Length: 195
Image (cartoon, rainbow, N blue to C red):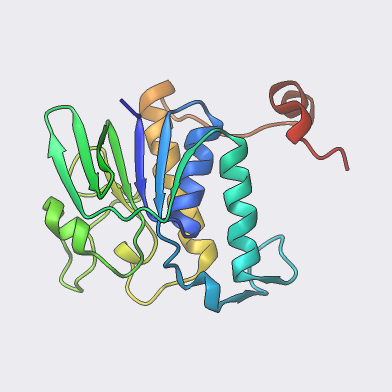
């Protein structure tokens, strides 16, 4: 059973996939490529002086692929449901179950509603600081839990927060994903930029 199922391939979903895949959790991300990032040009993302939104997504996808994430490109999740030991997603190709579910579908909150997540009075998914919804081990990231705060950097941070909470549960209290140069080279070899 995959440890983490992620629905959505924008900054939030890919960030969650990056953190969980990099740290050894079996991760599947469903990416229909419907993100608004294709309309964006980044000048306000830390560490990025200027980058087209589509190029940014290509870079994120390459990183996710490098860490062994099962990226289901062009596959739409049509249904989500809770099971006795996690969650099940349904696509045209079939069903997959996992312990954790990360919803990263932007302003489309249909799957969160279908799942039975609580919503706020403002009509967004009710989440805590770790992006966890009212349902244990189900997370909502980015615009799903925010009213009109739709920035790529915020969404990526939300995806990272969800993944770090999952990693803390799986690997121990307050897991930190922080690599230093020597450790990075030993762990990730050719993926490390020596500059």
